[in-house]
Amino acid sequence: MAHIVHNSAKHAGDRLNIDIESVVNKIFSHFSSSAKRTEALKAVFAFVEEQYQVVRRHVPTRWLSLWPAVKRLHDSWTAIKSYFLSLGEDQCPKSLWQLFKDDEDGDGKPLELQVYLSFLNNVLKIFHDVVLLLEGEDGTVCELYDMMLTLKTKLQQ
Image (cartoon, rainbow, N blue to C red):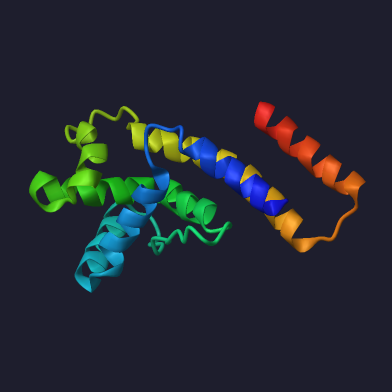
């Protein structure tokens, strides 16, 4: 049952304008391959007066890895955005620049990626919690029904 819930979230995510799994992994790989980049990101965190948090990775075969990675990007948005904008078009990975470039002038309007991160931070948490429950219990049919009904209700709110 956990597999079905996970696949529901995954297939719904495929309908978004942004491939959030690719974005999460591209941002992770940008920093994981370079200590120099990580130090530069730490400096940006200090500049925006936020505590540094390691960028998380999403492993597609691990059902529970996407929400924590999205949450970390969402929570670190100001520093992450500032870092990639500071690179400029020539230094920023092209696929990421396409997502960040619209805020190059700093007008303060939310970027499409920022909106998706906010949305997915909330929605994926709902799926994440249900998958955790399903993986951790050998529940009865009545308990399973209650979990699915709760999932449906939360998604409809």
